[in-house]
Image (cartoon, rainbow, N blue to C red; front, side):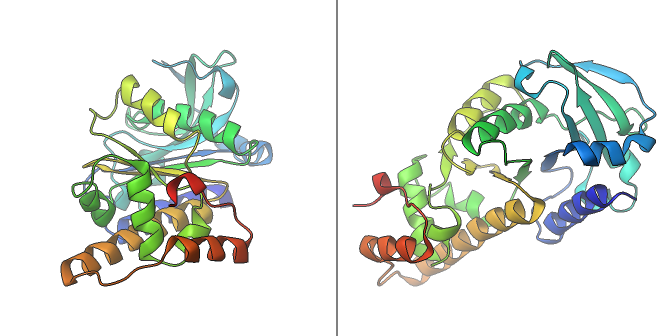
Length: 266
């Protein structure tokens, strides 16, 4: 099997092992490099076409690996052809063709509109480097969303102050979107707005979207956020006595050569 598909499968299963993908929860899309789609061309046998409910014209002609709607992350390594697939967007970005996988009538994740619009936002924000959009249901960051108002400054400061590496991993902060019905175009557009600024956003009471250039970078981002949320909730239950100061966050950012979001500091 082609390495890009193997790497994709590994990330799906790593997330399941973390407990982030109960039942059919969560989804993953990867924007393939030209050489990767060429390497996989021998697999392409399907020609099912599907219209899109959003305008994805900036992604016209791009190839994506995607999880299937209603499919379980735990089953991806067992039968990739039934649980994931490769799609190619039309030349006008108004639909896509399923080229491989998603067998037995499966379709791409119901969150595909969110993924595509999020890809567009992160491509612009990273000068084209971003290729991965990952949605998961980690328990601690979801639980944390019940304890605060949906405010990016509040959330980002909690995470930065809970784990020293956080300000280095996501110096822009983390966005948060108040509760909305998942799977539709409204939440897709609202999520894409936030991802113009942040590499990751929390869906209140639901889960998280993370982005990155590689599978490792994206998984590491979500893992770091989830661990920081766990530390905060444990510290809060025990009683927080002190934490990392804003001046220490500035010193940390300077030491690692990153530009921290000063709007979130006092």
